[in-house]
Length: 234
Image (cartoon, rainbow, N blue to C red; front, side, top):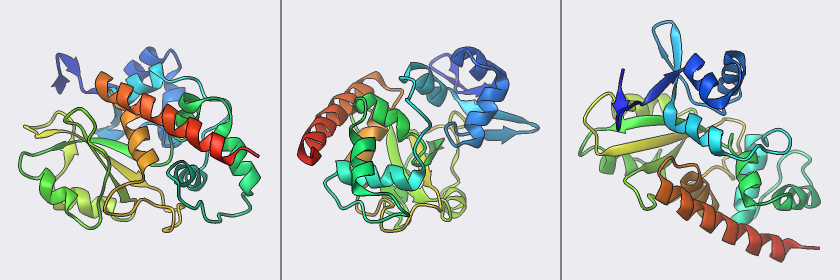
């Protein structure tokens, strides 16, 4: 099995369930909901250890995660941008969703904004990948971990073009998280080049398995959240 620092990089559904103290069916439900990325190996699904560890330490969110389009509206507000109009969501409702609880709880509610995949990136490839117009870079933070967004439609072609593989399968420049934005997110809200919105970068760092990067994201997200909620207070 692929190893990262002496531990398996990928976990079976059963092993993930044990780590999260839930049933295997609950893990399969998380996969179906997009809260855990999964890859099929033969007849089995495996999930990235880093994502399971994130869920294990994350605060339990109040209520269900927000729909991806609503999540990106809140990311726009947090980043000082217009949230636009999606469905029947009212500005007052967005303000309530933004400022409920605390920044960590908000991050938990925004966790299905995109479907993350932990991938290996061959040395020399990552610069070309981040120059691809289909790929929107996110912040690199304090670690070697790279994050980027891509639309769900473009994901298969990008993976094939750069021969991306699940984490741990070959010599890499560093871990790489490619996040597929669902088709339900309007183009006006989806991240665009040259870089993902500030709040998305902070969320990516907050969700990192790297301790320094997680701390960086946690502090930055709390700062931005407090300032924005103070600005939109009625």
